[in-house]
Length: 259
Ligand code: HH2
Picture 1 (cartoon, helix red, strand yellow):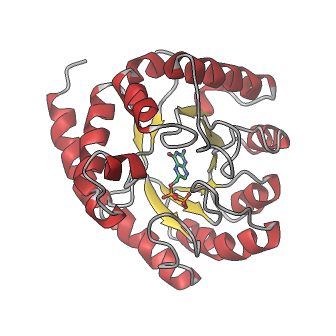
Picture 2 (cartoon, rainbow, N blue to C red):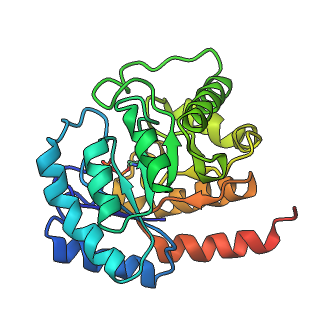
Picture 3 (spheres, helix red, strand yellow):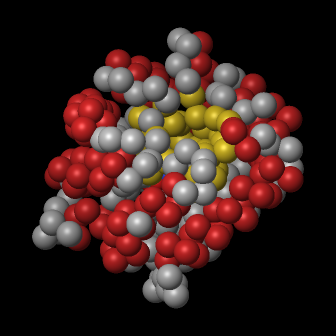
């Protein structure tokens, strides 16, 4: 899954692809590098990010979704807003990536059900404005697992067939470095829920902290290491900025995994 951020304030690549043409071109480049899915987002979820009004988010993402879908790319829409997801599905997106797991707008689940879309539900502690303020868990893996199981039940109760739901432990969303590492270490416990697991470590700050304070532009080795480990522990979808090098690493890793 290649990341197409149409935002002025993402933690990485902020403002690089604000124009629809530039963003769509970037999406096509990621697809050419081997991305099977292009994840288009118009609202940064980095810690402390300010919410974006609906009209502004629509203005950012719709032309990009339209262009990429018209070129027959598989597009997911990274949003927590039902109105944005609805218009993106109208424009050709087929997956809803909701980092709030339908908590911010529960009607999102009904929309996904009605449209026969696939969805990714992700764990986050609270909301982006406060999630990194001293996050605490008794046992981060079992709490994230229970949350995802509950959200999966909610999705199914709302009419989404279980086969259309992917789960994501939400690396960096209300987690310390140690929480992120523990989730990666014990990812098999999340995989055991029985749905495809999405993993998003790309360029995230814990990789910088673990490598002596490296900036985003220098976090590719950490991104590769964590995605390879996640693959080995059973993850199915890898959300990344740098598709070509991560895909090469995943291909090599996949060739050595015995299942
Ligand atoms: N991470 C980000 C955004 N959306 N979706 C899923 N399913 N999993 C993730 O880990 C995830 C996500 C944050 O990364 P990015 O889009 O690069 O940054 P920003 O939110 O600042 O635009």
